[in-house]
Amino acid sequence: MMKEIHITDYNCVTPLGFDVQSNWKALVEGKSGVALHQVSDNLEAFFVSKIDSEKLEEEFNRFFDSAQNDNFTRLEKMFLLSLKPLVERNPILDDTAFILSTTKGNISLLKNKTDLPESVYLSKLAQKLADFFGFKTKPIVVSNACVSGVMAISVAKNMIQAGKHKDAFVIAGDEISEFVISGFNSFQAIGSEPCKPYDKNRNGINLGEATAATYITSTPSENENFRFKILGDSAINDANHISGPSRTGDGLFASIQNAMTEAKVSAEQIDFISAHGTATLYNDEMEAIAFNRMELQNVPLNSMKGYYGHCLGASGLLESIISMESGLHNTLIPSKNFEEMGISQDLNIIKENQSAEIKYILKTASGFGGCNAAIVLEKC
Image 1 (tube, one colour):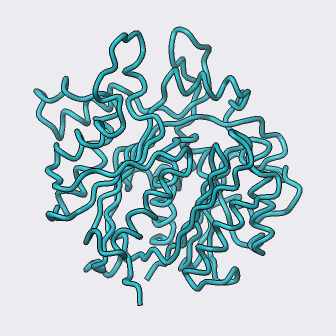
Image 2 (tube, one colour; image 1 turned 30 degrees about the vertical axis):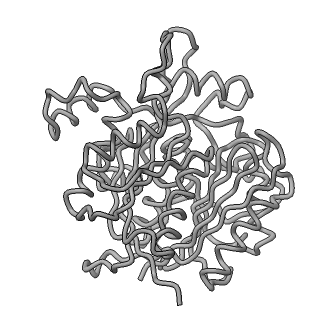
């Protein structure tokens, strides 16, 4: 029998707050971090979800020696702030794993540089963060487009079950950059207004930035009010297209099917789905097809992109954390900006805050290159 794997702690840093409590309060009040920002002098203004840099500096200086300020990039400060409370509450053992999920890391360091700074390499970024907190094991980097955050949870779960590590700290993050904005803009994928996942009038994504961190272990939490298990996971690549999702939802369907099979949970038992929901024409349609193929069309579902934008490597972990908060509070958060169904197959899109008994949560993600991932969480 495989050992049970638990999530016993987590934290996040986003435009809505620098801890989970402030984020949850903002979400319940319907607040969004998405606003019109001038990201750089070379680009027009876009609707993005961006952390206020002055507030970030203030928060960093509250918890870290001001002499360290110049030693870290803006993204690294976000990572340190999200991980610090977890490290203070949970011991780092000799075999504790450190797993970093990110798609672009310190990509902003490349601007106007002829030499490559060391921290631009993802492995070096991970090592810098791990060394700061005193991790003994070699860091693991998960960088698989937009499924990275969900896959990092899966990697931690499977390595602990295989006996490679006793526990793991998983940290995920990306920041808004000119490089990322330009890339998505070249695909004509960025919306001209706050994004509307699954809505008839959606016209593209809003990008966002955040960091999130979680502690994963085979030891159950001593806190009776906070107990979650990772019951099942799966990642499938359908190799459909370098950037476009499968029109039939094959990869996502198989990922969900595998995760639910491992979890021994049926479609009727799933209480809530935290979907990827990017508000692009083809992604939302693909998800609707995959969920219907799994007979999950009646399960309450939301996308968090209307609140946070698409945070790339952070999105899967951040949205998993918010899903667990929903479970703890027995409250479903609406899919912001959704008004009228804009997909060919119906889904049960959450339209307003509502009470619900939540035990089994399905979290999904999809990304470039045909990658798809799913995990099933249980509130114990």
